[in-house]
Amino acid sequence: MTLGLIDINSGNLKSLKSAIEKLNINYKICKKKEDFIDVSKLILPGVGAFPDFMYRLKKKNLIKIILEKCNNQIPFLGICVGFQVIFSKSYEHKETLGFNLLEGSLVHLKEKNKKIKTPHVGWNNCKILKKSPLFEGINDNSDFYFDHSFYLQSKIKSAFLTKTNYDCEIISSVSHNNIYGVQFHPEKSQNNGLKCLKNFCEFC
Image 1 (tube, rainbow, N blue to C red):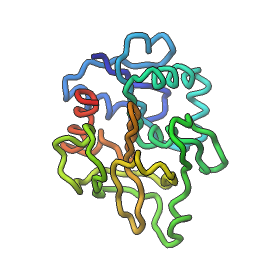
Image 2 (cartoon, rainbow, N blue to C red; image 1 turned 90 degrees about the horizontal axis):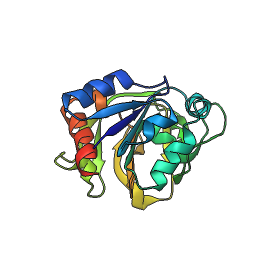
Image 3 (cartoon, rainbow, N blue to C red; image 1 turned 90 degrees about the vertical axis):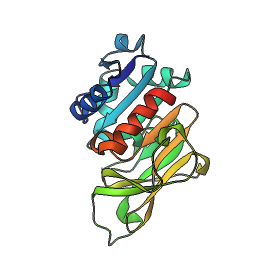
């Protein structure tokens, strides 16, 4: 198994690489189309604004190859903004289209609760909604590290994997067939995060 870590010069790649190396998982950095040829799983980490993130992916001509891999049933894990771009669109700064692998929109947290403090930064628990290999061996309501201001609005409840309460209820991870996404940062979530990454690489 060769894990591909997608690098668009925007994301927490250094911390993710460190976490993957701790787990002794074979990986390669994917910066251009040719790098994706022999990968068997993909992780897309992301920080920052949704529109800029999609612009960088488009500029590097990576959207088509990522979608091809996903449509060919390669297991894919999106982290933070990498999770958000799985869905149809985001309203961060301006309406911007995502991968549309799953139906849903990203909306500012204050649309749900005007008094809420944004961004949502720090440790928070994840209530497991359905059994998934991604959370194998992880206790229900375990804590993970978050840093975001937008939350998922979607009607595809069958894909909801965990939910988190931050003065309002948000979906914090999803899984559907070979597509996985986590709003939190597993690479910053200590033992629970390492276990989540290991599960993706070994069982998903």
